[in-house]
Image 1 (tube, helix red, strand yellow):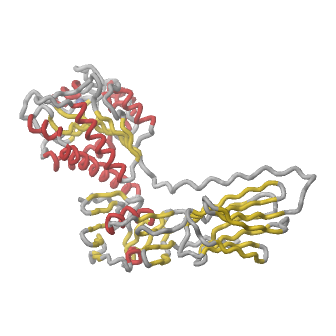
Image 2 (cartoon, rainbow, N blue to C red):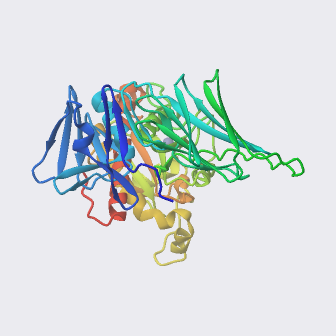
Image 3 (cartoon, rainbow, N blue to C red):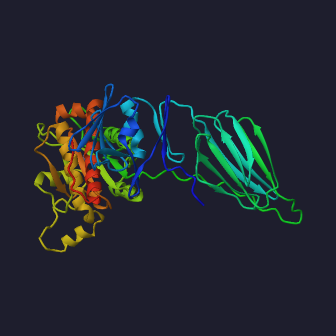
Amino acid sequence: MVSAVPSSIVLVSEGQRREILPVVRGDVELVPLDQIVAGLDVIVLSDPKGGAVSLRYQKHEVALYNKKSLASIDGDLRLLSAAVVYEEGRWLVPVDSLPRLLGPLLGRRVEWRATSRVLVIGNIGIPRINVSTFVSGDVARVVLEASENVPFRVAQEEGRVTVAIARDLVDANAAPQRLSGGIVESVQFVGGKDNLFVVTLGRRFQQVKAYEQQSPPRLVLEFQGPPQAAVRPSAPVPTPPPPPAPAAGARTIVIDPGHGGEEVGAQGPGGTLEKEVTLAIARKLRTQLTNLGLQVFLTRDKDEDIPLDERTAIANNYKADLFLSIHANASRSQGAFGSEVYFLSYQASDEESRRMAVSEGASFAPSPPVSAGSDLALILWDMAQAEHLEESSALASRIQEELAVVTGSEGRGVKQAPFRVLVGAAMPAVLVEVAFISNPDEEKLLASEPYQNKVAGALTRGISRYEESRRASLGAFEPRVGQ
Ligand SMILES: [Zn+2]
């Protein structure tokens, strides 16, 4: 049987209805950008070498980069579901990322309806039609339920019954539903300009009755088979569940707001508590990462004390792809300032880091007996974190580079120390000391919402860049980190 599923996608906006043929690369569906923005008054500026393309609409600008799954949207970086590709003079964009790009650019609602393959731009009323089927004894029933009143037109043809809906577009699941019992073989939405549903009749079909009902508006088709008094009625066939939403390959990040409850952490000279600052930043970070399409969990979302090992266990239970523990620094010297990002080691990279690890809960005694080549190395390799150290280091660098811009702390950099909270993490894991709560100036900043947002933004950019280079290396081309 020839599949009647249209391979093109339909773009609908005010006054427009266009079909666009996508391009498939691997398992990614891409669409030519010029065809998408045609007629939308978007200015497209492609750099002559095809390295980047910029889209402008009124005050908004979106920039895309060849072979990168990252977009700059009014200066904000957003992750896309797959890389943008520049090929033979045209820009190809992943279909399912279009809402993320076009929504902010056009300042309109943009929705990609994957099952019906419709891209909706703006507030367009498109009725949804939900098909359900029931088979019971000598009757097969097909119900088309609509989200609003629509004109159903039923026609009986050779071997099939069709239902047309005279609207610009309807939204329906194109996957065919098969029925048992031999009265009706299948129901399928084939679309087209008539928005056609086709019911294929089976060999036991005798006649059909059609009637409409209200609240909700629906068309009921009753297909009659020969009476089978002696035959046990077959069980009703449940409607197959809708296909799962297309997996965007969402990655999971667990954020750990340091300290909590009785365990207040460090305290600033003005009385600000580390546990409050870390939770505030973690919540803002969650919002920003969620906006990028990542799945985010916090180890605590209120003021409670959670043991260090449990925090990592939470990340492991969620099978997180990344773990980020957030803290604020303290120093005896009130002048100490800036951010530091740590990943795990058995030995601290310097004396100050060792002290830090002790104050944040070191994984070992404050003065570990260290002798090179001893079995202590084995202990390190026993840790869940051991096999992720390289990735953790890369993640730490990205985050530190971004934080340095916000906190002006280029000098402090990435460090290593035996933080207990990182030891059991079975994924790339870092601990961030955002700034010094012991420094009166940084304490004020840490307590302020704009600064917390800035820090969350820097952490988000660091994570995005790490994710981008990770994907780039999976895609086997040299990562080049953008701004
Ligand atoms: Zn802390």
